[in-house]
Structures are given as C-alpha cells and as structure tokens.
Length: 213
Image 1 (cartoon, helix red, strand yellow):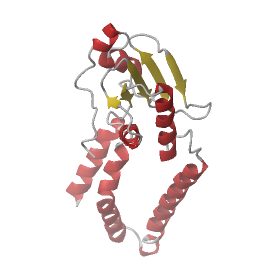
Image 2 (cartoon, one colour; image 1 turned 60 degrees about the vertical axis):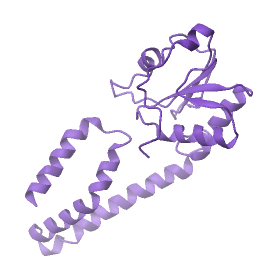
Image 3 (cartoon, one colour; image 1 turned 120 degrees about the vertical axis):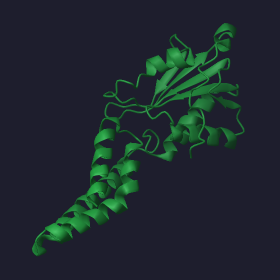
C-alpha cells in the first residue's frame, strides 16, 4: 500500500506541470483506487469519531464542484461557447456558408494536439451535408481554425504552427471569431491561395486524424 501511494504521488508530481485537457482523465482512471486507499487510511489512522466526517466532507466538496460545472454548462450560450455541441454545428455551418459551394481544405490548431471536438464536428457535419471538405490538405480555398490558446503554456504557439507547420505566413483574406470579452473561443481564418501557395505542402506529421478515439 505504501509503495502504491508513493508511486501515485510521484506520478502526479511529475505530470503536474503538464496538466491540460487530457490531464483530468489520469485522475479519473485512478479514482476508484484512490478512494479505496483513502478509506483504508481513514479506517486505520483516524479516530473513530472522524472516520465518517472526513470522507463525507470530501464527498460534499466533489458534489459541489460537479454541480458547479453543470451550472456553468447550463449558463453557456449554445451558439458561441465551445462547451456545447451546438456551437460546433454553428461554426461549421458558418464555414460552409462562407465557402459558398467551393471545395476547401482546412487545418485545426488546438493546444491539445488531438483537438477531437472540432475534428469530429467538421467531418461529421461536412459528411452530413455531402460537402467536399478535406482535412489537413491545402486547397485553393483553405480555412485555418484556431481553438483558444493556453496563455501560460510556452509551447502552445499558434503563430509558429501556422507559419512553420501549415506553411502559410501571411494575413488572412478574411477572418472572424466567436470570442467575447469574457469568453475565449475559436477564430476562423480564410485564405484564398494562389497556385504557388497551394503547392507548398504542410508538415506531413501534423496530427490530422481521430484514430485514438
């Protein structure tokens, strides 16, 4: 038990600087074992009158945080907040309407390199509308989708990604954003590429699929 707890603590200590969108999933994986270990320690080392108080307190805190997240979801605007699937439907519909029937390629930037939400959404809604949209390939009409960046992560640099990975280093022909004063959200950039720009291939090692889901 002591070895397990030491391993678990060291694991969390090592990954603490790298927390992000995927980080909570590590916690959830270990949650049942953590609960059992905590209950065991309470039973072994706490006085009898405190054995139930501490777990109940922690349960209450967890319930409060869960309700708080649910309330934030209910308050969110479903057409301009990325917490909603409706937001992605609206965003993809706006892109398709902007394309005006023209085939386009697109690239998606996300601090979480897998960026599953927008990848799923664009593929799903483009297929649903039978629209010719190609992921992570340059076309004469190309869109870059930028998810909200993480300001305190020095490795999350959307400009480097655009210039060095996608190989587009000029201002967009058109762009719009779904961000507000109090909410950061996606920014969309449209590029009408000339023949030379379209032939400059993007980095082939960009993570363009959803194969890990």
